[in-house]
Image 1 (cartoon, one colour):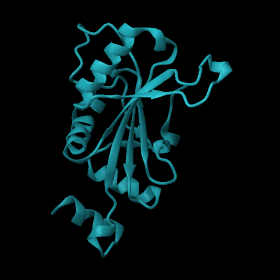
Image 2 (cartoon, helix red, strand yellow):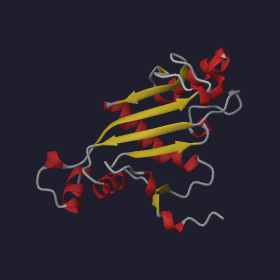
Image 3 (cartoon, one colour):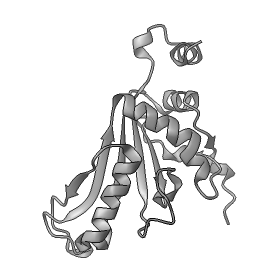
Image 4 (cartoon, rainbow, N blue to C red):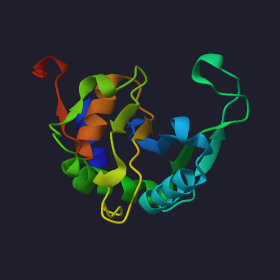
Length: 177
């Protein structure tokens, strides 16, 4: 039985086109105070390209923010948007290889969902991805992965991500003291 059929039964949906799907995956990385360090920016670009298989897009500040010492037009981050087969391959690799390699990973928190059913996961370092060799890289940076879905609510999104193999843990079970 296919994933769509299982979701149709679980969510009690009659039309196969109403079953929630993952539309896009956005992989983001902020550059912070190292925005003027060309070596750092090149290393981040190369690592993101290696992780996603696509060249990252530079994101520039739209407004000047004096508190963060950012001027309009400054580089503030890098982004890659995945769709189609690259997205499906990335999701499979992310669930089966990357998440288990994250230090102290016990499951994705349920509060990582927004009200539209999209999932946001932040990784503290890019070394969890199998494409990155820790011995050959000299920069460490965090990565945020956003999964955009067609789910109408959080319950549909939870069922969708569980069908893809994501492991979740309840917020109340957080015993980090």
